Image 1 (cartoon, each protein chain N blue to C red):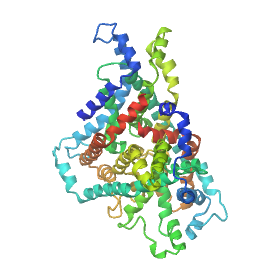
Image 2: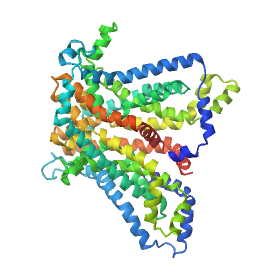
Image 3: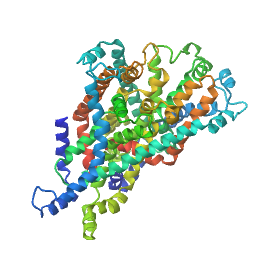
Image 4: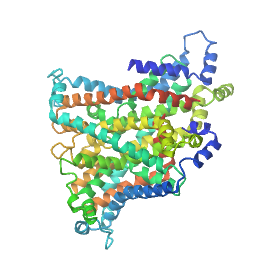
Length: 332
Length: 294
C-alpha cells in the first residue's frame, strides 16, 4: 500500500496545475511552512466530517474485524477465548469454504471467457450508424440498474420447475433439455452465472461502446488505405486502443465476482448441497446462522484480503498507465 | 467527465459517428439481428413478471408461458392497497436520500479541500480516501454489523444510510476532485478580489459550476443505496424497517403459494427504478460508465 500511495502522491505532484501555482505564489508572501490558523480551521471543517465517516464506517470495521478474528466468539458474551490463527486454519481446511472460493473463481473465469468476448463482439457489431441504437443502449442497460434482489426473484419465478423457462424449452421441442435449473447441483452455479450475465452484461456493452466512440474513425480509414481487412483492423488497431476500457471492465468484473452474494443467497441459499456457496454467502451463513462471529470475522478478513490484494496488484500492473492517462486528461 | 466532453472538439465527434465501423450491408443486417435478440432477452423476463401479475395463480400454474386471460387486477390492487409495499418504498426512499445527501455534502467539502488547498499530506489523504474503491461493502458487512451493534444503530434507518454514505465517499471524491481542479484559478482570484472568502468561493462559485459532476455522484449514490440488499438484511429484523429489495425477497418466500401476488409485488417494486432510469437515463448511463473510467 505504501508504494501505491507514494506512486499516487508522485503523480499528484505532477498535477500541480495553474490553480495550484497561483495559490502557492500567494502563500509565499507568508512565513514559509506555517499554514495560517485560518487555513487549518477551514481544512478541518471541510475534511473532518468526511474523514470521521470514512474511518468510522469503512476502515475501523475491517480493523476491528481483524481483532475479532483471533477469537472464538458467539457474538454475545465477552471476548475471552483467544484462538490465534485457528480460525484461519479452520477456514482453509473446511471443504465447503474451499469450494466457495472455487465457485467465486469459476464465476470470475466464466465472466472472462464468456461475458467479455461476447460483450466486445456485440459492442463492435452495434457500433455503427443504425436505427434505434439509443433505444438499444437504454434497454440493454436497464437490468443493471435493477436491484439484484429483484433480478433474483424474477429469475426464480421463471426457473421454477415446470415454470416459464421449462415450458419454453419444451415448446421449442427440447423436452429432454428441461432441468431442475436451480435444484441440480451440477448446473445450479451455471444457472446463476447466466442470471448474472443477464443483469451485468449490458453495463459492459455500454462501457465498451463508450470506449469505441473515443477511437477516431480516421484510424480505421488509414488502416483500410494501407490494405488491412476489416478483421485485421479490428484486431490490430481497434482492440489495442480499447485496452483501457477492457482492463477497467476486467477489474470491475473480478471485484464483482469475488463479492457475489445477492443472487445465490436469494435464489438457492448457497445450495443445493453447497453447490452455489460463495465466500460471501458462507461468511454471512457462519455469522448469522451459526453465530460464529469470531470465525466469520476471519472469513471476512480473508475475503477482504482477496479483494485488496487483487485490487492493488491489478492497479499496480494493469491499470496504472491507464489511470495516469485519464487523470491528466481529466485535469487538463 | 463533462470536462472531458467539453475538451473534445465537436467536428471530430461528427466524424467518429460517420465512420465508426465497417460499412458492409451484411454487417448491418447482423447488427440489427443481434440488436433484436438482445432486446428480446432483456425484456422478456421483465414482461413475464409484469404480465404474470395480471394473471391468477391457477392460470400461471396451468400454462406458465401463457398470456393473461382474462386479465385480473386483484393482485396489483392487493399490493397497492396493502401498507407493506408503501412502507418498503418509503424506507428505501428515506435511506437513499439520507445516504445520498451525506455522501454528496461531505464528499463535496472534502473534494474542495483536496483540490483547491495546498497542504502537506494532501495526496496521501486523497489516496487514503480511494481505499474504499478497492473493496465493496459486502466484504465488510459482518464487521460492520458488529460495529453498528456497538453503536446501537441496529433496527435503525441511519444504521443502513450512514455506512452506505461512507462507502460512497470514495467514488464521490474521485469524481469531484478532478472536476473541481479543472475550474480555473482566475475565478478564485476574481472572487478574492471581490472580497469573498474561500468558503464563500466554494459556496457561490465552485458548487454551482460543479453541478453536472454533483448530479452524477448523487445519482450514483442514490442508485447504489436503493438497490442495496445485504446491509438492510443484516441490520433489520423487524419488517417495518425493510427496504424494497429486502421486502421483495421476503415477500417471495412468505407468499410462495400465492405466486400471482409475488409477480405483482415484484413488478411494482421494479417500477420506481425503471421510471427513475428512463427519466435520468443520460445521467445514470453516463455516470455509471464514466465514473469507472476516472
